[in-house]
Image (cartoon, rainbow over all chains, first blue to last red; front, side, top):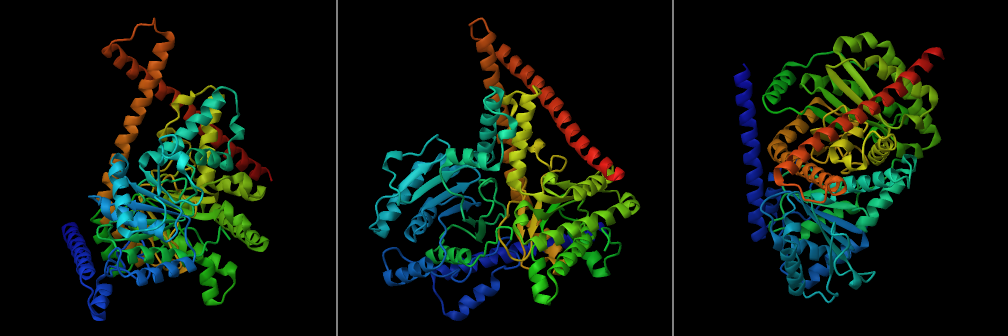
Length: 283
Length: 335
């Protein structure tokens, strides 16, 4: 009997896998070729809603990528649409798929900044973006030039290097990009705890002095960014994989199937989904 | 309503459970049981009735978990932030908790029969004293049971828990049990309220909200997160199966990510030991740099001593926590 159960289980998971792959390829097909409405409806049907661990974005999924520099009217409309609603101050881009695509992440970063997000952080659990940060930065600058944004060059800061790069250039209203790795997560909490315990060891402090606001201030000091209000997760893994555990207390987590060939409208969908969330703060 | 719901699955449910059990099943599932008040509004019943129905659903879900071979469940019952709700609702929730823990004490035999160990995670001192005593009594009464585990997060937030863990480590330093340099990721995990449990494999939040709301932030950093739109009092066996299937789809990639993280943790610990030994040699050595084999030996030796210190500290911490509960529980008997 156990054998039968196992066979059925395997069959079930093979079917789920096929469904997932099928849905992904249909989405990719539609992205390159904007078909009539019935095709989009078909894509919606095939999207594995029940399988997506995280809720997908609202309207606007799976449509054609907006070519940079074209269709300005449409983009302006979209920008207005987001601006009118609630916009997060800090967006985290969490990439949980391999291989990472620098161009697509750079696009996402530039789009975020273009709609008015002040802080964008990029994370993957292998620390790949952190290791190759110059590559990502080059891409971001390139995408900005391609989009021809008239805004000033964006500041790019790194965490865990002590302080941010280009510190002297920071202008209050300028957006900041942070490239994060697992080191900025639990590791930085442990470092803060280690620091506190050293001060206790040297009798500069007692254990009673330690509480949430004090620890939070200490972590913020070394980070210098507000908590992300929205994390957009790209990829098939339904987990945050170590993304800033202290800081995602109230973060809304929205999932998109992949960051490869992601479109501006996909990102807008995630932002709109965030705008509709209601935070009750325990009440 | 009782904590233990006896009952069997029907044929189709039993078949599905058996099929699911052919794959990897989570050892520990955490629930954010959201939607009791929305359920009450939808059904036009009292808010308090919504909370009661939510509790009944918990008893039913625990039974399903056992039938799916999930031995440990953690639930978010009351957040520290919830103290901000209206006086009336907070009082109502405290009253409900009192009733349920009294009920639990009545059902001691049934809990023993099923081997259910109940733990309460959170800052008990924030609660009214009579509730604190009841909770302590319930925890002490079931703490020897070891077949299945229910952790109830009450007066809990994850940030509070993490800050408390840091405070406990600082206490250990003050007491001279550990050195500040012994602080590590593994030690911090051991100082959390949840130190007796493995990290949850699966976290389920109902009612369509897509955030963690300060729940087990540290412990779920590599867990499968499933957000479901059903309201908690309407949660069904099939919703649970759906979540387990999602866990199974994620199992391979999450296991890989966890292993990667553990390797990194080991590397960091070794690095820390090396740094400590280097510092010791610098202070006590005769000025000459030690050769590689001697240094390696010193690092291993240092690691052994560090582990011994940490063990003593954790024993002391456990004793401190146990005697706090035992004392509270004995007050309850006197009262």
